[in-house]
Amino acid sequence: MNRKIVKDKKLAIHGGKKTVPDNLKVKWPIITEEDKKAVMRVLDRGIIWGPYAPEVVGLQEDFAKYVGTKYCIAVNSGTAALHMAIAAAGVGPGDEVITSSFSFLSSATAILHQNAIPIFVDIDPRTFNIDPGKIEEKITKKTKAIIPVHIHGLPADMNRINKIARKYNLVVIEDAAQAHGATYHGKKVGNFGDMAIFSLNTTKNLPGGEGGLFVTNSKEYRGKANMTRMFGEILNPEEGRKYNAYTMGWNYRTQEMPAAFARSQLKRLDEYNANSQRNGEYLSKHLAEIKGVIPPYVPEDRTTVYHKYRVRLNPSELGIDMEVSKFRDLVMKALQAEGVDVVFWQTVPIPGQTLFKLKEGYGRGCPWSCPYYHQEIKYDPNDYPETVKLLNDSFVVCSEPYPIYCQRFELMKYYAEAFQKVFDNIEEVVGAE
Image (cartoon, rainbow, N blue to C red; front, side, top):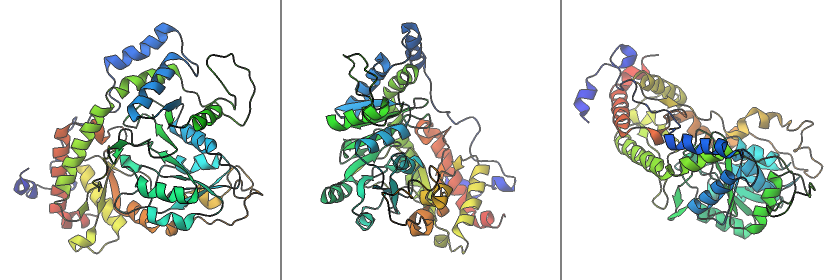
């Protein structure tokens, strides 16, 4: 990259030519002829539903083998898979479950689905994952489980989390909705908790339209989770259905066509992840050279699949005295004008969302007003300062329809050049409001 040429260019926000050419972005998901044939085979076969239909069973077997777990259950969403895991853990009314203050809403609402209370922990400012050093202070006699979230495709510090869980006899459920194929200490996520879940939503590195995957090495947890999936019934494919519910259950089954599509996509997951890592590493290398820009941090003991590529900004490093969120907005505007796909993903900590401010839940304040729970909980986003800081000073490069894991390497070169151009002219950017 010729930095001198970039430095002399006029900013697009001031009428200059934008850096990134049009029509370079690749839209997600990439649907091949093999994907289409896989779905058409379902229609040709004529079996389009069923908990033990061939594509559902095949997806379960394929993904368990890919991750390295004994069991996998395919369901209709990652949220459903997480609820199943929480139910299988025996969580119920009056119990508390610890999770991260920075995640998608489902990491917390799946806890509410079991009439339990989400307890939030702030994040590590470098990894954006739950801070293990802040977990123990949130544990009470009512705590039953910890749900670490492998946010943006980077694994949480599972050794430290598991050590705490063993000390207090807590169940660990990995929320790996964004982290298919990411590794921690050389092993794929999904192997470090008692159970783990993945999402197959179209935005994920492994897309299935909609869907989710529950994995475990425990036959007991697998059985309990399957009851939650199937109306509370105990089902055995070799036996006829008895239509007898033993516990509360839901209809979380997936269908044959999404399962077939996900199976076909799974064959290319490692290829997508490798492309994502190449793109992410290239961007990080070049953005790290730009004063005021902080690329994502990846500890040496793990790999990320860059489901989201989040960049932080530091205006004070540039000698700019401005509210960081205002600085971020101006930089985003300039980058977008240059043709860089930069977006928000989450704008407030989960405990700052209206659901947790009102605490109406299912109505009449449940589950917080449940007679099995006597504590007064107040959810204040200011109690999670690192999460608040992150959401004020950062944005994500590449949007969900055009994620980083499917983009051409050539596009990353243009993106890096656009960042350099914007920050070479940062005084003009902050004065452009």
